[in-house]
Image (cartoon, rainbow, N blue to C red; front, side):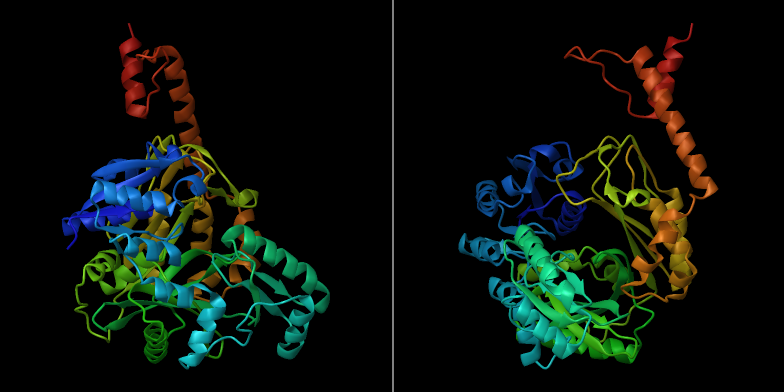
Length: 504
């Protein structure tokens, strides 16, 4: 096992990796930008090194600088988390060439699967079913229109590199093709530095179901079961579950075997995820393989009992997987992504200082967060603040537990997606599991337009009163610090103590 590991990431995933390392007895090195100097992950690590200004292009995306920090601090391995450098083949290769260990797949596997078109070619060669479409980038709109006529409209334009819905456009008629192709190319170039776009048949009403795979360096490749990821807005996942109501044990076995075959064909090592579309007849089609840890990995951890992050590190250190090939999910897990967005205002990002944070607890509740009271939320990075995950014996029980946990969650100072998640969980179609990847877009007007529950209105009023009281207390009683400025109070209890001290 390594003695020291550097985490090339920030926020909740950096803290998640630090916790895994601490249980393994591995010391950690955090890196941070100027904007993250006071971030929780910086204090949680054993060491922390500043790597540059707030923009990620000047800090978290500087692979050479991160490798230099790893060597200088004596770290033997680098864990990239997700996002940033996690799926960059050149970074994985550079880490290896520097004599360090990349906690993830080898660069050859990232290269084979990093391009969606290359991954489709590999999948087809391995006998894995794929959505009908091209395996090479489009030359121009005329070629795209000819292909679309062959498959039939609607079709989907997709960026060959990257993910997260960037560079994707649904085209429903020939007259839309030229404009959609130009827009998809521009977005792909801006997001990934690669404007290659290909076309697929657009399957109406499918579910997005993915299979978690994990592979060691000794030839073992396992499926850890499926995750239901159909609750999406603009191709961005918002709520994930494990298992899926649409997947029977027999279908789980077939999908798992298919995912394992794709991973083996690519020479895959470490944790990865095969994403599939599952149509209404039970047919599934390979979309792509994410060559990294997924945001939603906790739901798989909770239903399998396997710490995926720890096993990423163990595999990178050369350990063998000890698990059976026929894992069966136990119970039900749901994850809600808590983001700094305002759903009632078009999901616009919300920035500011978190004046007060109360995290839910209780049986079966897990909080993977990168924020705390006093944290400043800016606009430099992804809006995801934390993940709230629950486990229960059944899906109905898990929904009830998540609803309870969301009601306990309190974030004062910025807008979040909390109330939106509450409304989704109260939706009758969601409760029945009658969802697919277009479901949320169809239901969105009613979900964001509903009035906040009375209890939430009351909570908001109480929070506003606390903030107003805090401001009054600061003006009346805040002491002066060494720089001559007022030191703000941070909790209602501190404010109360100050007011008591002022009473005659």
